[in-house]
Length: 623
Image (cartoon, helix red, strand yellow):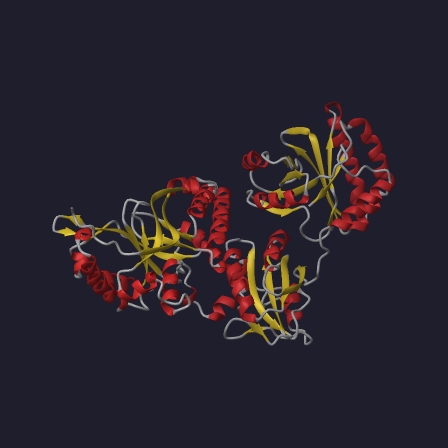
């Protein structure tokens, strides 16, 4: 009877997936810009959620750009169960980014510790305390952190089973001696190279996976070169393909896809460059700054705000009420219509800076982000965040409010005269308007009595291109019961068209706004900027009265020109149904708009409309 060799004891920990992807560069280049932005936004959100699991001690994930022809990306996941690994794979495939990738290869395995060494056998014998240094060391091998190093090297391997070179025919003691000598070489590279061994027998085509991490790729080369001369390798090891990569953050993906160097090496920048204000010419592409900004900055009652050596703004008596001063020095001007947030936290400065550093990587993905800085003020920490649009600032606010210790926030908008502009209508304003219109016997809802929320944006893109883009969005929006139509309305007397998206709930409308933001040629949103935008006024006109309706609007428009506080009113028609009309009207204030609603002229127009409209007019709330 043949002798059965003793297998070493093993312990297993987290399951590992090395997911190697190639990019379909031709398809990516041909994709519309809005599709690429949406795909990047989805994959960044997905990967941020995955790489964040390490904070809970429930696994780890990392992304690497792969050098050479074998792959473009490696996404590495460690999780406690195969169910979690499988879910991550499916979640990736559901992103829009996935269709631009192809899996080059993958490796499924599980972290493993074996009992070849005499010291390790004490762990398997159960003769050591579970809180001992050895027990903790073994746990770090079974539930490892992914080190934050520059490079990764991965390769699969087998032990040979050839005549005269069959690893599994060796007795336990001989194999243990080989492994001890092999480990001695590795220990000489401690602090320079970190190793993770994962077992794959019965899980994949190779028996083990070896993952090495280090800042200097040459250290990995030297380690493996030296090991080649060790008998456990020279006589008994076989290797698969080697993959080399550089660690990148999810926020680096736009640069990666654009062909720019990744990761962005912040070590090449001084703290002053990273946190100090951007010069106006770099920020806006314009020269100089407004005299009003200069006069305001030089006012003697304003404190000077300057970054210290670490890039944190200190020595400020307060974060000023005007957003033009938030986190900026006295000479900075970012141009007109900048939206700012000030978030206050009672957490310590370093914790807040850590949270903001994580957010800033995502914020920088968006063109509308100008700057986000951390400041100290009066024994509390403040975060100042500047954006080009109110919508982007509001979205950012929802993330900033999750920062540790946040208790208060403040937001404003500036113009080039540093005047705070009147904000868009709030929900209370909307209810006040509805109530006042009802008292005037003016219908302020949809024909069937339910509330409807409208998103209205304006675009100067070519009309056909805008229509195609909206049709693409509708294919997705129509899957939701809360969607009540998204249409393009053309202003035949103007240079811009409107996109109007109706939703049954405010939450659904808010979510849709993120997708609508990718439409081409956007020049603004109905409820952005200064002044007051009325509720969206939508009318379905009987075909026989269409021309009469247009003429009546012209008459009313002439009256509006003479009204105090009126800025502009436009009549737009649905390009898919030209009897569906939308009137957009902007005023200096809500009070000015209500004066018109109370006027006899408006009452006459409403009475006249009862005859020519298919259904009651829809005064829909802009959201």
